[in-house]
Length: 111
Length: 367
Image (cartoon, rainbow over all chains, first blue to last red; front, side, top):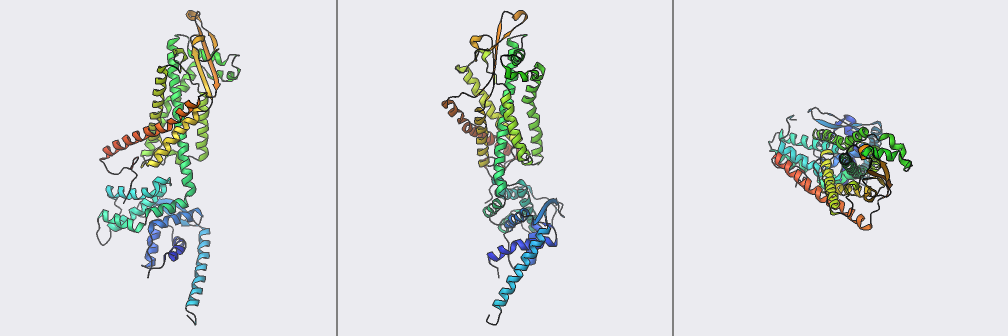
């Protein structure tokens, strides 16, 4: 089942922040790790992730730095900031709240 | 992942894909580099995968997964809206610097030549002696504070430096651009760019423009018109070449070329409306452009001759028709810029043996 676009769009910021909270990384590697984790649940249009990364950088939720990747090539690494971690925690809490509410309503006595 | 570099043909196509997204819209070159890194990693991933694919097939797959270039371009422009706007203004500011710089260099060079002619014409009595006498004259009191600056060697040295130093400067920057450095105008802060523009305007106003009154050339003769046209054409070509050497980082786009050509021209038009110092040296009051000039008493074997020197601040007194003619400058400059860019692009293509090089009018397109 392929989730609808709105759901993917709404979760992208949090997914990126969550991936960066695990490990600082560059665009391609972030997308790859999330795709691996999604295991076919959804497929991103990869180029659209970069505007989101840049927006997160402007909002100071992540910071960026050019450095050498394991492959020896120069890549722009993103690091999550303290504000980013707070935003991730807030966002995850909201998602959980919605998730519990939808589960409860859909799976309730009349569901 | 394979650490081998990409095949040059595939690399060029991958860069063209990224350029399609970023270049035409003044997005930071680093964004293009970041996108290229993604495309490169992805292609290498396909090439080293279990199912062997060709470079071209890998590029098709990458393009498919990367998403619609127009959408990504639009999203990046939204995120970087301020930078896009500032980038365009920065480009105009640079065009103004090139325009003013070329006018400054052109006038300084012209003055050096004029001084040499005057030295030859008046033999031992040099023009700068007349100039010094004018600056220290009671008749032009506002010029007196500048008189210590005007000794022959110092004045010629300064003019010579202003006229010829930029070549070294251009060459140095050309080498840096070719080595992959970011263009200087992306590195400079806005305040520095503004200060340089103001400085150039100030210097342009300070350097006297010497009409050749002593050669009995004035604005009514066809000869002076021809000289003016040759000088203007030389200035235009100089501006174009300065831009290519100093500022322009391929791939170029038609839009940026056109914008820049107009900005050059408009810089020149605005400059032509500023007041500046004019100077005239004439062998007799009758041939002086401004009457009365300051008479200079000549010594020795020239004591029976007279020299008349005028130096004055003035606002341009062009007629409406002359102003309208000046407005043609951006159009002509735009045409010359396209021709020079076209020739430069062809030469580069021939040197590289063809292929996409992204010169003017050939914005890379990956369909």
